[in-house]
Image 1 (tube, rainbow, N blue to C red):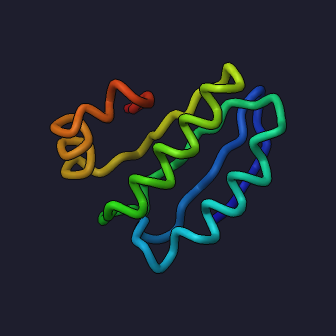
Image 2: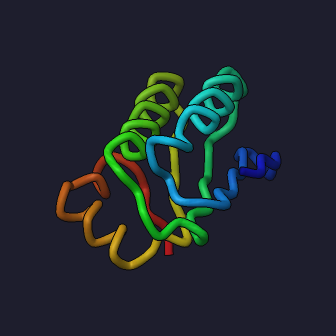
Length: 98
């Protein structure tokens, strides 16, 4: 995972699938950054698999950001993951960019 500060947003590039074994670091690093006055954009280009733990990290991050008036955006989302998120109505919870 790579974190970079951009224009009014923290850019997070995931480099592996978002599954339970790999969620602890993402959760820890995102929580450490939430006090900053930045939206968060996550590049999911390298992610081809996400499980319930991964979804939980994303939902938790969005809830924490929303409480601060900020937003979580996902981009580079695999077509199958995007379809699953839409079926679960998660596209209403955070922004899915093209």
